[in-house]
Length: 297
Image 1 (cartoon, rainbow, N blue to C red):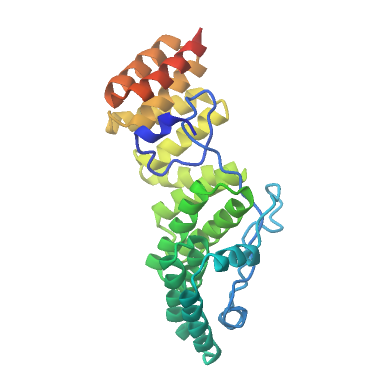
Image 2 (tube, helix red, strand yellow; image 1 turned 60 degrees about the vertical axis):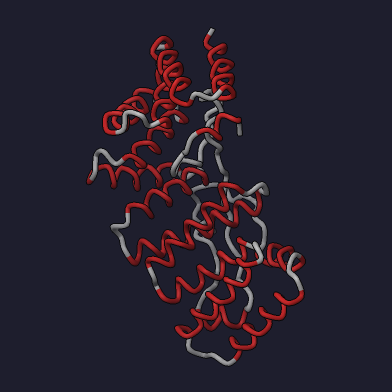
């Protein structure tokens, strides 16, 4: 990702690469499914298979995915001895329970130990188990967003696949609890664009825009999808809609500049890019923009 990326917030738009758009955004390719967690007995009692929603869907190619066992084994190696002792103590408590509802606090405690030692993928998984057991909108939101954020930053493609698959599963569960949660729909759409299931993402975002035509995150994401699909006229409309309500939105300005370029309106694109340079006022950003402008000739 180019230095350009560092100088402004992309809010919820982290899922897409537009090579011609200054290297702003990174496309995350995901797929596959997840594996059961440990403690296995407790998860089985809780009715948690841990399988992701992509298996057998037939809508996108299944991509190689890390197993939970491999993620867990790697995380265990990084733990100090006292942390392992804390985890074992919680595992003993699991063996004494047969009521799945009562397992939720233990899963949360288990997750907190992993989180304290910066083993976030494992922590996220156990947070998600607790959230699913309680059908808690707040906790499902936390787990889904944690998985999604991990996926955005993950360097390993196979671990990324596992993380985003879990994000999809959590968002799905969240929307069962509250079908009107638009933030969850935006997050789920981001995941679907990454897995190659673009139409699923488009349907979710259009559902939001039908109710709230000026919804900024949904318009931004649809605009970026328009750039990727080469529908520059539609992308232009989305970004202009954002700027109508948020004139200083840098994502929309840069996206609109790329849409103008795609439509052959280079002068408009150049004017917007110069405006972005002034707004950011950073030499490194300006240098990246200037290098990009050279590709116009």
